[in-house]
Image (cartoon, rainbow, N blue to C red; front, side):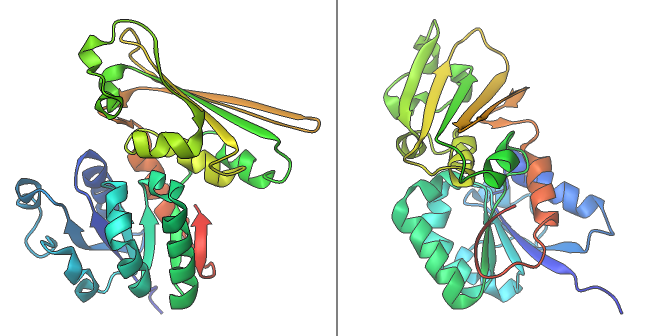
Length: 265
């Protein structure tokens, strides 16, 4: 008996979306197929094969997706999350949306009522597995992110990246506060908060320096008799890391059979 093919809809067809699409299509044995691609940009959507291009996201259910993957902006979850989860499974890559308590509660309640699942990809976030496995142990979790200002939406705090000439702290405080300020830059922070001790108890530090040409994410978690310190350094393109598409693809492959609700994958 042949295995059922998982039909996947993609929201957002920028650098990440295109790379994930290519990875899914490149492996004929992965049991997956793309059933629609949606992007707000008409120019981007014009490059999508006609049978996959979805102009109006309100029509997503007509493609019968088994999973919808958001790779665009947290506003997608705010505007469409409930409608999607009422119909099918949902993976949000813009995890900063979950810093909004009402959105997190809405997704959880809708998924349980509809019998669907919401997935938060975390495979590419260094240290997340250790945090998740020991989340009842941690007393404190600190995240430090260091980037070039041109790879951060500095306008969110009224700064022009070209005007930053030295090391500058853009944010220092609870993770819940950094997510709405830099929604496209700190998905790592949001994922760590979800895996560990929550948005209010996790501490975030975002630092930029025009001399840096790599992105550094350092996580320090402490608990009784336990001290975890991990660091990741990688090249960056735009606002995202080079490993992001591969980690999303791996998370899609790891979905498995789980009950309704929110799950880290």
